[in-house]
Image (cartoon, rainbow, N blue to C red; front, side, top):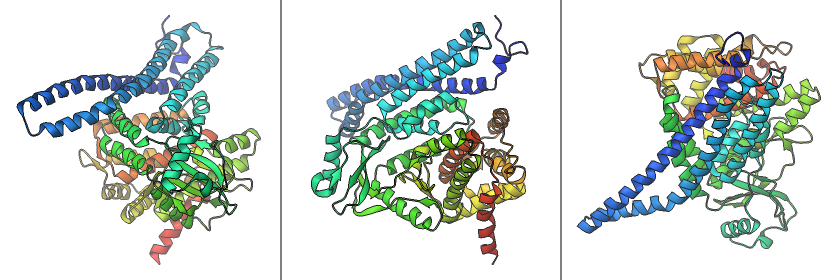
Length: 517
């Protein structure tokens, strides 16, 4: 049977197939990374032979090469095991979707959607289970995907949601050892009560509920033991992976992207940095209604332990689902609007923001307060960059293309040709929805774009990027893109009836008036 896309085979023209093809490309790239890892094993063996030859020849540099070899060899068994598990999982998923292209031709149109949904769910569970076992940076990828309800099929979002705060927990005795080593006292002396069962477990650490001797309820965050070694390994795998998919992506500054991801993940390994960011952002947001940030407990912050005030709340996505199911459109719009306002305040006014807004890091309390958690991944913007981003956003809203191009170049963006066309296309892809929201949408007529609209815009951007690649991206922009694509995914999924002007314009008009005065 001919399955070539045409008018008689509408299923093959489904825009979701484009997403499926993109997903398969990523899977294939992962398998390519596995192949590269195995070749590294061969290179390691050849390096060992060269080192032995140098030792035999009495070459002075042999000692340095030997020490490098020892470090590489020590990581090799874990590297092969992680890549074997990941590679086999991706192979199974890739094969199942390839077979679906054949199988779907023999399924009735009425049954095909349910069959594809079941395939999505089966593969999502496989991806979820491997992510939970792997932990580390690999789990973070799953967490980010779980928030992209705008691009992933519904079964994937539902199954990956557990990755937001339900990673495999560390055994309690290991938790006790980390706490007592870092805080220099016994667990019984430090806490009046300590619940051995974690209330949340993520890629970097897990959180326990406890009570201080004075009766205060606190959240105790403990870093997973041995994490530094796993992160070293995962960063190697990440770079292998990005090298593998480079040919499938528009030419861009992949080095800056991977380096920024590595910087933020390594920064998360020091909870003292997180405590400082928690205080800074918390102080800035202190007077904002219905928003709160936990506070570190003085004297209880170390590199691998962070004790903070405990705030009861329900996960953001569960609350959004509840309001949507109940038909509470006003409550849904209010919560998402306040979430947008929360990040606009951090980025445009404070110049420092929590850069990991996946729904597991956001709670909603019984009195409808929005709680911002986990400041391990935080970005501080330089004043020139913050002003530049403010100016680009304002220029985008007013359609001032020349101003946009000038500001983007001043912020550190650069194309291969030096012309701004690709930068403007890039800005359009990220900011056009804000522009549309501000001038065309209203509470009564949201007018959210369709998946077809998004695919068309993406294809246009890819074509422009191929013609004139972006050779340089400022590091700050990587985290901004991460934040607003995640938030955009939530808005696209829930499509609230919201007047974006209510939340957007005060942040643009207020600072502009202050500068004018």
